[in-house]
Length: 306
Image: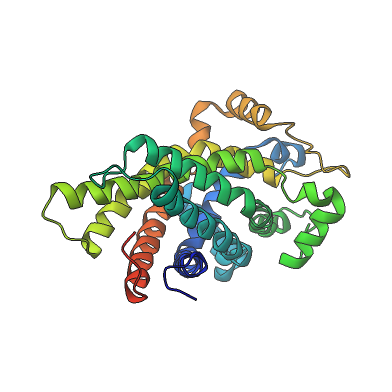
């Protein structure tokens, strides 16, 4: 397999993404728990708890469920990133180098980077949506047990089987629209920002194509990605976590717009940024871990810097 082939680039991306996902997953679990608090199902079951914030939520999970529960759902999360990150990175690089193409002076215009980043992110997330659905549902199981509710799933395989039996193939893509919308925005913030900042630094400063340049670019990418992706992430999480009927239809929200409207009406506009701190706190180390690892393994395997 050629080091410059698409399968090789896919495998290298999957390795870097798996490393980043494993390291930062507890922050993703904390973020998901924060975002679910306050929705209608809590009031229906009369189990609503006060918002505790990022740190207290994480400590509460450790005390009430055990430290290893911070990694509950990490397996489908890694599966998701193998598909999502692999597809989006390969797709973006192909769009940048073969379809949209750089200018004659080697510069990749911002509008092309925006189009490429959003398209690559949307495509990657569409393929990865079933694994994201399983990840979100597994993350909420510990909380359901504490509230006295019966468990819905007992592992990755059981989750897939249950979703298929209740909603068919279409059920695996429940919530895919907000999922893809969020991924397009996050990819715009992450991929596009990293690419543009990195090459801006290389053109306009004395920095070399080194880990320092990669690190600075990844910090910017994580902040922009969190700012752009948090509202869509809140909506996506709530739609994917809701209970469904036998036809696979949600019992709380009928659509992305319905979820958005209900959330703002009940909890206010700022609720769309619920979980922003853990999202940013996760995206910053995730982005840095991913990009540093990704750039280094490309270098070790003889592939040009991204």
